[in-house]
Image (cartoon, rainbow over the protein chains, first blue to last red):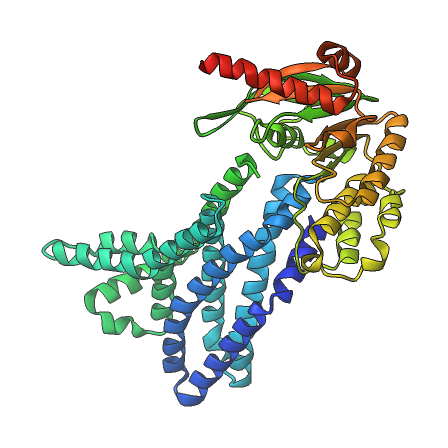
Length: 255
Length: 243
């Protein structure tokens, strides 16, 4: 499997896309840190980019890469190699390179500007969302053998988690505004990995004061030891269940 | 060596294979014949574990292959259309395959030389012509000295010289007691190679006997003519059925 992983990594790096992605992150992080003297504000602005761009790039790049590697997968399947190793090396190859790109792209400017301590959590959250969306991309590839359809499903996932879900959440909160909704909002937002990432970051920046009573409630929960382990557990679940499902499907699918 | 027990496979509503039962023995060369869309490639893919049968079992060397992968070390496979990662150079492709098969010490690189692939080693795979890609597939199939060779349309797209080289290689390997399963539409290519024929029609094995039987039954002297007459009678039967 290490052998295959090596070839997948080489393939990903040769595509040069990961390089451009790293440069983009380097540039935007440096610019934001340059423009804003208050690192907290810079982190907030960066957060918005991270929550929009990182999921999109991760899910689309992974889906395209998977379909472009189809020949490679076919070639391996005629050899005495099990499907699990083929799948996992594809997954790890993409997830590792995108995580590395993010860590370098955000981490290097943070170190240079001396705000590494503020950025630590951001890098962690960014890498977690990268892994979540790489997993979701693999899930979308397991539904179809058609590249265009696969990318369509991947885009749908992205739209759902970054736009549609929050719309639904707002609508629910608004319609039931006569009732105490704190616990329900808390549960509902933890069902969306992007919301989880956003809440984690906002609370760490003390921006929760802007969110009134709900903010205080969230801070109370997510700030506690229980809340932190809950967030971590939910994020881990978001990282692993889509891969688990798609691995199971990959083992059963015809190639 | 390979045995299939009531293997069935559906794609949607289409029965691609229905209860195919076959027993393939070492030292024989099986020609897998049948019109387009009769399930030949699906049959091959289910032996390789790429297509998973809905029911029935496939055994290779007395071992059920469901969920297994180690058995593929005995099989050399030449696909109908060789698809390779385009960015790789040919040398990198061969190196990669060898690095994935560290268990094989003595690789068989005869076809790389005789098909003239050596001078093309630094070409990228996307820049190769269909025929050259087919030669790469052939060389890869023989590379690890497999005891079973599954060749899907091996001669399609090859020039006559390459066909001759490949055929001589096949004859030599057959003499060494290997098992061959070959599909081909170009019947004359297989004439002096095939020992048994498997005729697949709409997912059902219709004919399976030694080539001598086939020639006497159809009253034709050459293999190609015998098969053609077999397909004709099959057609006639269908036309009668349709009325």
